[in-house]
Amino acid sequence: MRVLRPELCAINTATLGFQTPIEETIEAVARQGFGGIAPWRREVEGKATAAIARRIREAGLAVTGYCRSTFIPASTKSDFADNIDSNRRALRDAATLGAKSFVMVVGGLPTGSKDLGAARAQVADATALLLEDARRLGVRLALEPLHPVYAAERSCLTLLSEALALADRLEPGQPAAPSLGICLDVYHVWWDPCLDRDIARGGRSNRIFGFHVCDWLVPTADVLNDRGMMGDGVIDIAAIRHSVEAAGYSDLVEVEIFSSTNWWKRPITETLRVCKERFASAC
Amino acid sequence: MRVLRPELCAINTATLGFQTPIEETIEAVARQGFGGIAPWRREVEGKATAAIARRIREAGLAVTGYCRSTFIPASTKSDFADNIDSNRRALRDAATLGAKSFVMVVGGLPTGSKDLGAARAQVADATALLLEDARRLGVRLALEPLHPVYAAERSCLTLLSEALALADRLEPGQPAAPSLGICLDVYHVWWDPCLDRDIARGGRSNRIFGFHVCDWLVPTADVLNDRGMMGDGVIDIAAIRHSVEAAGYSDLVEVEIFSSTNWWKRPITETLRVCKERFASAC
Image (cartoon, rainbow over all chains, first blue to last red; front, side, top):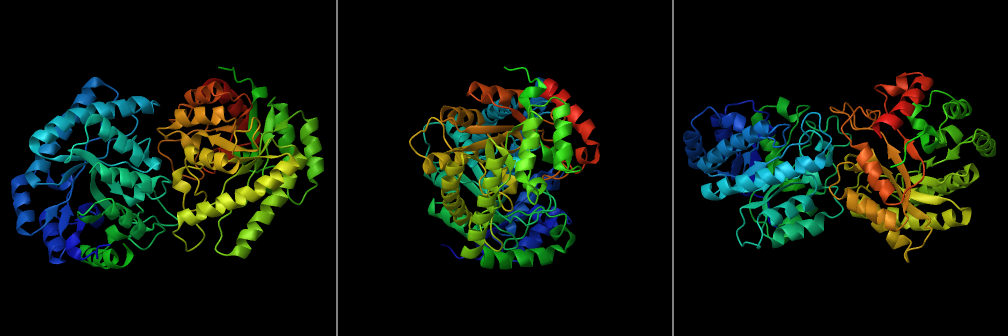
């Protein structure tokens, strides 16, 4: 297994709690020797995207992912169309940033709906449309299956197997360099009894576009914003990384920690330093 | 689909917050016309089980399930053996109560462990042992897959497909009247993209021993004790009941609501009355 030197690691800026403007965050991440960064739209939109892209490039950082899609399922056709448009705009920024992937967190049930099947159908329809834009722009779409605890409000796409099946269906023919794949976050999938099987499947189809780490704390105070630093919880991160790399993944490993309870309260230099240590000791 | 008259419905006593002794609870449940009750060990152990069994019988109630197994995975062989013994004692009480099933919530990771595979292996070993006792006592074991949010602390068994595969493995040969099956709770499985497929599979193998209802609230304040009354959340309970009954399930439908936030604070007669209404209107 690869030794996780910092240059093989990336920082998802959500980990730092959005305390500093993206320009400062870029410098801080580069200064610690990391190899990549994954910015969020809230940090980029309304600014000159090309200037941010240049700054990231000049800092020597790759853009592992651009976070994230506008939720897709909607109650009306008009809202659905708006969600597609919003994602198309973001895809153009992802291309400008040179992001390896646009991360798709697909959304849950529209307000008032109990129909998960209909929500999933909207996600499939939207992904098929966005895939055309993505190909034209040279950006890959990374579907991120989320932990089932978010099925109602954030992602009707839950299982890794489900995400891979959707990708195979929308982009058939086993392309050598697919444009539609998945982003695997240990927080969302660590519990899945079929995890190793599905990682191997994702590897065979070259669809593992991203690999995110953090930890599951016991107890978890809040399932949204009490994620743990690698090593502080119960996920066997090294075992999952072993599976992912055995399946052929050789790109950067990205840390993404939503932690209003702890890490977001700390100076970003401290959080970056601990990330670097834990990449080496707990992944 | 069956009309859910109260005599087709059962009350899991956890729904009432354990405010009254089991004897009073039995009378209150029977008075509302329900067909069954599912008591917990905390209400039974230390009392004369045969007397409670007689009281339930005389009230005209079936015992849909006896809740629940001692968590199985342990750090030491001695603790593992203790957990088996505890479950054996509970199985004898389940037999005395005439319970249709002993409900198995299998437990998560032992303290300090990150090895879900080892925990699952302990669960399989223990279930094989307990199955011998269960057969001798004429009690069925109902494995309850829990929502993946509980994987660390309460159940390394998460997917319905996983529970059914374990049952098929430990009790092969497709028996017409198996002793090992599953208990399906909508709260745990509603999000599963393979739900209909797996319910049909459970029906074909006659392994659906219990069907529990409640609802998933949006937002959920606490994933353990903020479950909702049927109709107050986003689960399409009627659709799932339709699948379960189409698969051949014709036994009682049981309500089980963990709700320290709301229902446990109300008089049990009020909660029972609302359950009766919602069985009819929201299931």
